[in-house]
Amino acid sequence: MNYPQNRNALSRLFIQQLRECIDAVRYDKNVRVVILKSDVKGTFCAGADLKERKEMSNEEVARFVCLLRSSFAEPVIAAIDGYALGGGLELALACDIRVACEFHDPRGTQRLTRAVGLSMAKELIFTGRVIGGEEANRIGLVNHCTPSDPFAKAVDIAREILPKGPVAIRVAKTAVSLSSEVSLDCGFLMEQQCYAQVIPTQDRMEALQAFAEKRKPVFKGE
Image (cartoon, rainbow, N blue to C red; front, top):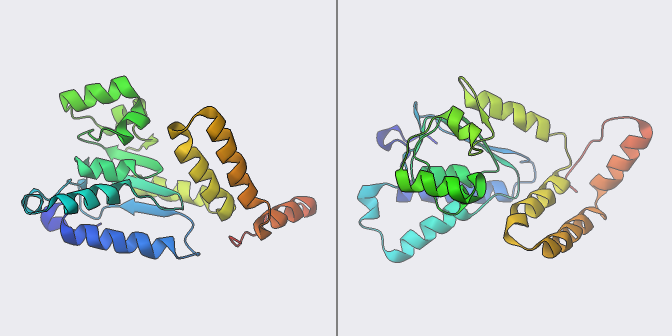
C-alpha cells in the first residue's frame, strides 16, 4: 500500500484497487502466501477517507465493510509498521497472521473480539486506548512484535508456509477460520468435509510418496 498523500486512507480508489488485487490473487494458482504491507513510513493504514465518507451512499459504505470482511483463500500476513486506525485495523484483522512494530487504535467490534476476547475488546473499544506493538502482542492482537521491520518477520513466516501443501493450507484455513462461528459438532463435520477435499489430490499422493522415499515433497497445488 503506497498512498503517502493520505496515509493509505481507505478512499474509493484505494478500495477499488484493493479489490482488484484480491481478485488477481484469488485466481492465481502460483500465489501461496500474501503479505500486506505499507510503503508509507509510520503508517499501515489511516482508516477511512473521511472526506469521501461524507459523500458515500449507504450502499457504498456497506460494500466497503464487506470488502474488509472478505478474505483470500491463501494465508495472508499483515506487516504492520505504524498506525492502523479504524478501518485500517479491520484490514489488519482480516489477515490470518499479524506482525507489528507499533500499533494504534484498536477498534473493530467483530474481528477484534475474536482476536483478544470479549472483555478486552470492550475495554479497548470503550476507552479508545492507544497501544503499542508489545501490548498488542501480549493481549493476542498480533502474533509477533518486532523491534523493527515487521515485513522481514512476515517474510520469514511466509517462507515457513511455502513448502507446505497449498491445497491442505487452503482447506485448513477454511476450517480454522470458521471454527469460532459454529458449534463443536458442526466444526467436526466441517473438518471432515475439508479433509475430504484433500484425499483425491495429487499433492496428497506426492506427500505419501515423498515420505516413503525419504525426501521433501514437491507440491503443485493439484
